[in-house]
Amino acid sequence: MEPTLTVLNTLEREGILGRYAIAGAMGATFYTEPVLTFDLDVIVVLPQTTSGLLTLTPLYEALRTRGYMEEGECVDIEGVPVQFLPAYNALLEEALKEARDSLYQQTPTRVLRPEHLVAVAVQTGRDKDRLRVGLLRDQAEMDHSYLQKVLCRHGLLERWTQWTT
Image 1 (tube, rainbow, N blue to C red):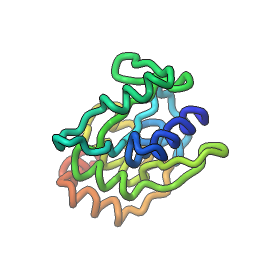
Image 2 (tube, helix red, strand yellow; image 1 turned 90 degrees about the horizontal axis):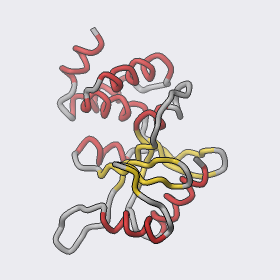
Image 3 (cartoon, rainbow, N blue to C red; image 1 turned 135 degrees about the horizontal axis):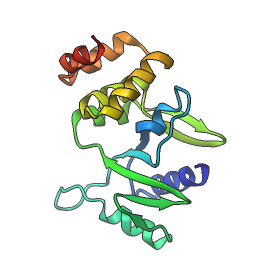
Image 4 (cartoon, one colour; image 1 turned 90 degrees about the vertical axis):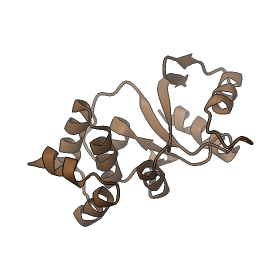
């Protein structure tokens, strides 16, 4: 995965994508025991177009010129399927802004805080997200006061209560 992160860092430096951070199951592995996942979820800020619309097209074109091809909803970058998820709502924007600088082996990257990983999972609401929340609750060092504030700010406290009672 280190070569994949090197490519992402280069794309960020070149302004092809704004800011990025690792999310999803791979993000959780920075705080818990590793889990099986088939892709790397990356939350991104995309440069604004002249029309104001967000589009992945320039990013995908830049990746194609580097020899990386799309596979379904992912792009294979150095053997790792990467799914780019634009920060399309207030929770993801906050999560990206508050993401922690981290190292994967020797490569710098950014990872969502565990509290935001939980909130995003609660917002998404799939069965596998519920499992990830349980794993994070059991293994990650979280600021529970901060988590409660995030959940309240984004209208997720009721669902959180349902999931945890």
